[in-house]
Image 1 (cartoon, rainbow, N blue to C red):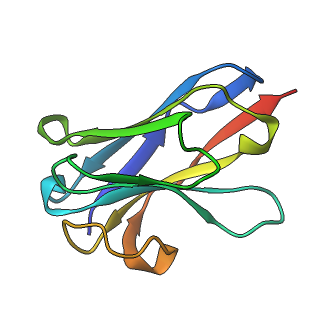
Image 2 (cartoon, rainbow, N blue to C red):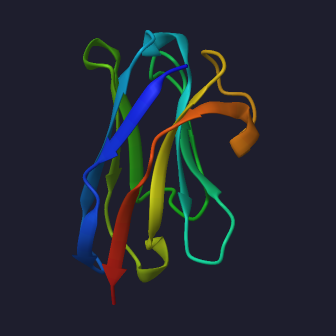
Length: 125
């Protein structure tokens, strides 16, 4: 398994920006597609964005398309989520995850076998 640690969460006003980072260790992350999910209180964990092993392909949830950008740096064993134009409804714990293989397949949580502990993002209106 890949060990994942998120950072970069915090509190921000609506319209602001944050950059989340996910540091990976334990395996070569270029072997895996990676993703961001989020979970708000009382809600199920939902897909945010996914990126394939090389960074050449990514998919976004409709709710974040045009505002969030996922990227990765395999040389640094890291993945990022640049979040802009943040909205109150973006408030959640954000998790990074690694899939079982290098390509984007399904965007459901059970596709991803390794998870970080999460980082809180709070957007005030």
